[in-house]
Length: 179
Image 1 (cartoon, rainbow, N blue to C red):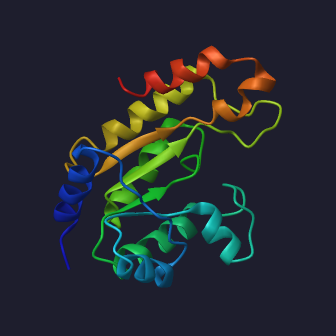
Image 2 (image 1 turned 60 degrees about the vertical axis):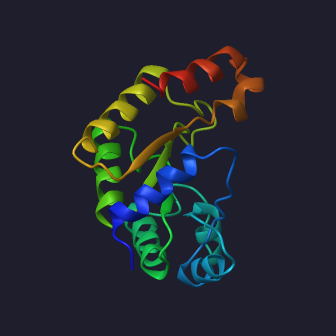
């Protein structure tokens, strides 16, 4: 079985190659084995697929961080492929919780992960930009010593832009994560 660093090197090379690549979403260890045997080069966990498979809603209120990370660890153990994870909203709005989430994700052998800016509150569906950026910065700082974890922020504003009339902030939010 390759090391986490070797898996990360493969994951990074996939991102640096010309053209796109497909990362299917296993919802458990069994589906990870099937997707590995099918010839994919990397996997990305799915919160929705996992939640539905255990009879729960897809939301940070429906699944705990421990449940998500336990399932991700089982997927990592089931394959020799690089695995990135859907880390929901980081399991807390504060920066420290997001930093702790990505650290724990790295500790279980994941080579990547993303945290979204959705709040779960229909009246305020997206975090304020300054808090979203602070969470990204805290997660990046927590991973500074790790050279084998790719972290990304998932902006959900595009899903709400029409209702919130914040089209311009969609691109601003995406660009803010690059800093």
